Image: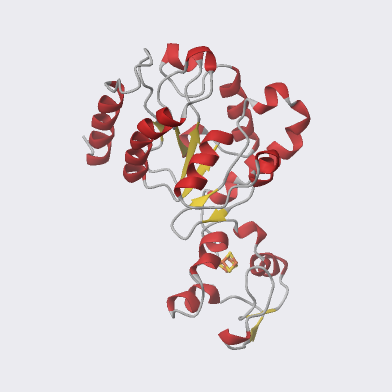
Length: 259
Ligand code: SF4
């Protein structure tokens, strides 16, 4: 058996035998592509997930599949898991001590899968990751503003999304959520210009902050002004940063191509 698959099976066995929180449920291990660039992290298994021992079955799973399909993606490209592995009675919210006890399993999954981008779905998963990586949390009433915004913490990239179940009771968010989920198809791969782009060279030479590479070249390259200029055949200087500003310290050279 492939080493990673073997380690994953062992981890799942350990997760399934956990009874720390005494929740009277069989803990649900994550599932999906073990080499995924993107890891979806949600709160806890629902009733259907608890009965079938599968991630995202039932109504919210159908919404997730549709959102992924609309983004031109499928479950095969991602890994999905929960912060709290056990179903919570009456679908109640997780308690702090449950999150604290159970997140060690999530940490082990992250160590094994090594995702490039963590995608928390909904409040509890996003709050957990923001706290863990010391990212400033907005006030509760402004929490929605974090959805669809890529964050580089200095260690990892986090791309928070609304939980798919949101659309079951808030259908007016359809347009916004479709747009936010569509970005996953950008995040699933690096920018095609990365190897030849001057930003890569500047970073290699120690002249460019890593955040530019993480947020754009290995993140949301679709929003990069250099990428957009390149695609449109618009001349742009080497020292133009991905957000379109000019960095005089990088030195100046005008080219019509990133090559
Ligand atoms: S700076 Fe822009 S064009 Fe260059 S590799 Fe990064 S995302 Fe692509």
